[in-house]
Amino acid sequence: MIICILGGNHVPKTVVKIDEAADVFKLLGNQTRLTMLKMLNQRDSCVCDFVEIFQMSQPAISQHLRKLRDLGLVTEERKGQWNFYSLKKNNEFYSFIIELLNLIDDQDEKLNQFKEETGISCN
Image: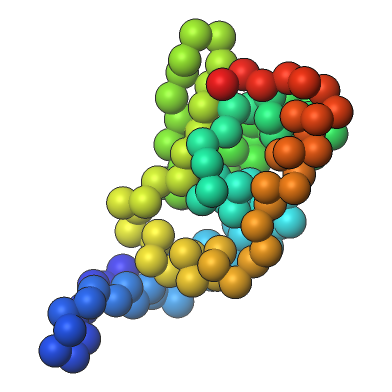
């Protein structure tokens, strides 16, 4: 990755090498992972949120999150018995992927529907 300064406004712009871009796009080419990132851009979430929202097993959700974590796109923090994930905004690819995430519709509806149907929240 290369960081360069453009114009007089000194706004940093990320230039990503093509092989790194391909890895990021490959990872985000999965609808579940892309949705997870969009949701994490809006708020931190627990594994249990994702299990219920996506109707997937905890191991399957953990695999998706591991792939995002391995590329450094998310961070994990343990709070009691729960693991919470957040979008890692200081990641080298953040400015690259945020442009894409900003073009995708918000995913609050999925989280709100989950909370209404189950009444569960690990926050």
